Every structure is written in C-alpha cells, then in structure tokens.
Image (cartoon, rainbow, N blue to C red; front, side, top):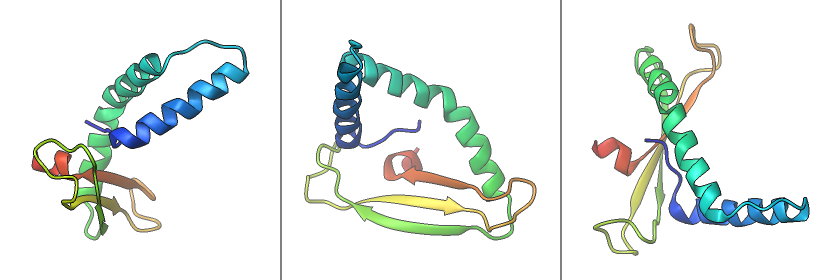
Length: 109
C-alpha cells in the first residue's frame, strides 16, 4: 500500500489543519489522517499497474536512497532504511515518463 512515513504525514496534517482553520473550516488531524490512508488505498491499483508497466520496459532507471525512519516496527531508530525511485526514460512507450517510489516495507511483501 502507498504510504508516507508517519512523521511526514503528521507534519502535512498539521499544516493542512492550520490552513483549514484560517478558512474558518473545522477538520481534525484524525479526519485528515483517515482521508490520507483512504486515498492511498484507492490509488494503490493504479500504482500497481504503473509499476507493472515500468517493469515491462527494456530499461528503467532506479535510484536507491537511504533514510532514517524513527518509529519503524522491529528496527532501532539509528538503523538505515531504504526507498527506491523507479522511472522510465523520457519518451518510453506506451506509458511516457513515469516514476514509482517504493519503500523498504513494500519491497519486503
């Protein structure tokens, strides 16, 4: 499932909540968190199709980046985790330019 690190979503939810407050709208961070999780569930089939298309290409570009995730299940906060960005070339057919990011947790599944 497509998910952002917990710290990232918490920061984004605080910012979005403040923006809603400035507009006079009430929306809790819990509600925003639920919306984010549900959107991730809804777009997952599209992400899976895009990744399948990428993996079918003759050449794809992959970037591996190390990240530190502070509350990752079963790992110390100082341990290294990975995130990968996979992308097509500039004009690949049939999908055109595309990028899929995969975290260590998704790759293990």
